[in-house]
Amino acid sequence: MKLTSIIAIYSLFWVMSAFMVLPFGVRTHDEAGIPKIPGQAESAPAHFQPRKIVKRATVLALVLFGLYYANYTYGGVTPAMLDFTGGPPNYDGSPS
Image (cartoon, rainbow, N blue to C red; front, side):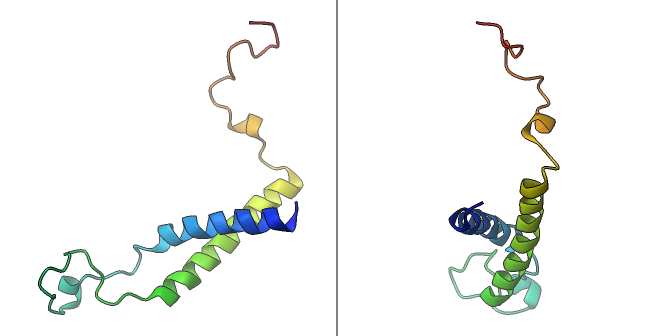
């Protein structure tokens, strides 16, 4: 696998991981006991900590990418193993 492919795939894993870890540990103003500003959304976080989110997303992306790369290198799970539908029509190779 080329370095550019590794960077691109890791970036996709990182963005996916960032969205996955975003809601964990978030407390709203009501939960934290802090008064809200008029017009503020009810679900707005009281203390947004982007560094913590970046660290969590980086660790999760490293783990997920490590599993992906190990599978790519050693061939543990193949696309044929994930085909639960039995394949497309005329899967036996006969003409349509």
